[in-house]
Length: 90
Image (cartoon, rainbow, N blue to C red):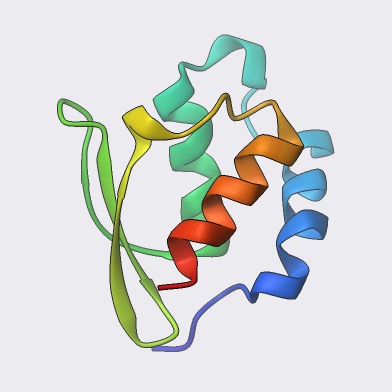
């Protein structure tokens, strides 16, 4: 299966997601919900656990497990994208 996103496009996709009217209102979602919707739109989500706040993505033919409890605030674009890029650049 092909990946849906590439790192150079990540900032553009994040901005598109934040400003899109075709998703639930972000202020009504938990931190988990915001991230889950984002990942579902741009990545291949393989496994998720709300209780443990973990999600497994398939990215560039690798499986990457993210601990979302360690992620910065999703709405802080700079910090969040920096964290996500670090996680995806294994």
